[in-house]
Length: 590
Ligand SMILES: Nc1ncnc2c1ncn2[C@@H]1O[C@H](COP(=O)(O)OP(=O)(O)OP(=O)(O)O)[C@@H](O)[C@H]1O
Image 1 (cartoon, rainbow, N blue to C red):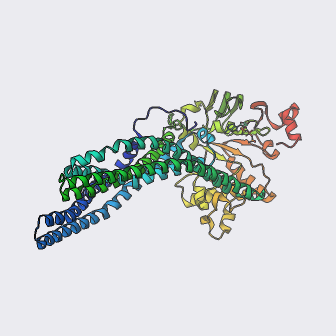
Image 2 (spheres, rainbow, N blue to C red):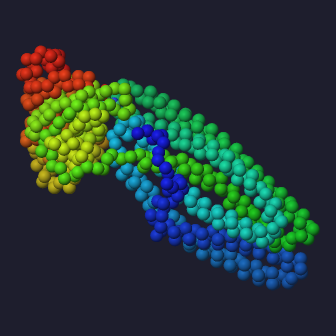
Image 3 (cartoon, rainbow, N blue to C red):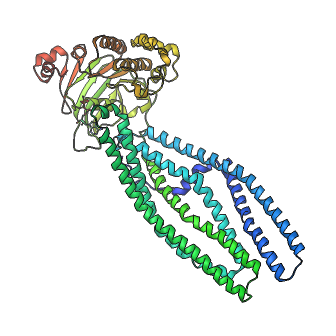
């Protein structure tokens, strides 16, 4: 399902949604928030004491007060100021840690939710994505949410408190000057609304193009052997360059708006301060305001101005977050695979396709499977043959419940596939794929993947049956050998035997085997075939076969062509029929 598809109603606004994650850590978050509130209020003490330090002596001297009294009062004020700063610093020490802890923990909840959801999404969702772009986009979006949680949220709270508190003080100092100053606020708010929307659009585009650049890295490093074999290093570097250029282009366009906005804000803010100060000086000259109040007004105005000045950044960060969370929520809103069906069904090994039609959602014009019908009895060995693109792997996908048929029925024994829960179904199906990709861990972990929690003895026994034990034991670290990224440190035949050991451990009722097309050396092939034979004993096996030897021993052969089964029967029956199968055998396509 494309990410851009319109989704159902959004129950929470972006920010309340992010807040809901923070609230999962409320035991740390709320005290930190309270501490932040308190320290922000305390920071208003700074201009307050400064005003006392500057204004009082001036007023006192004008009134002819004794300098010793002025000095003694100043000392007292400085002590209180330093005391307040000390309290503020101690609280800040705990508050900063609290915010980081609750922010990162909230982010981990979000990361976990996204990943848990991603792995439950249907295969079709992944077919719509370009490899790498999804993970890049998710991590870029999470990065923005992280900046917000760790920086923008505390900043917003802090500056809001200072803004409101500062405004109260400036109104107390001089309501007349305050009104003049506040006249500039609507202009700033309108500018924030106007530029903010633009910045949000650009930031989303910039995120997309950065993710695209990340995708190029991921794609080319994943297929680095091909990149090198084709001598395409420069080509890939250029592809990356182009993606970066696009990112730069969008970023610069966004930057122009942001820069224009900031210049405007700076001019508006400081212009207002200058004008108000000039007006205040006139009021002072006319005796309409005292020196202490004038000093208080200026100092609090600077504080208020600085806080107001940081709002555009904070708001633009919140707007970016809204863009990023929209996309994360699109992923979370994408429906997962079905969770329905019975989970107590024990597969006996019978399987049937009855008039199954299927098309991939991404290519609705192509009927990939056309009226497929076949029956497999428990314990039977069935070979699927046919030219590339005939639909054999798609049959496996339908058996595994990756997709549902458009028409017709897939059933196991007598139960409709859609009535069996996917976990129950897949738990009893085993697959040995054509290209075995291992995980980056140890050999032991890779075999254990077949049945998490299996004991070391069980794993060794499975490896023995898979003809893998002797080569594993010969490695310096044995079962603890790390297989390298995607298992690249092992040969193709060794990887296959690990996959077979995995399947033996899983002990499935039905085995789906996609035979490797690439030839192994004869010894390796003998070992793999022997292991496969052992694996297939006593279970239903469906094999996408590429070797005559495999096909010969099958109880039934299904010949696929253009999404249809054009012939079926045993090797001898099909050869006698003088049709597609015979042609395939003669042209060595099997
Ligand atoms: N995810 C997909 N989205 C759209 N079309 C697909 C997808 N996967 C496969 N197809 C198409 O479905 C058809 C059948 O593909 P399938 O992989 O089942 O063939 P196959 O017989 O297994 O071929 P091979 O032996 O080469 O693996 C092909 O035309 C293929 O292009």
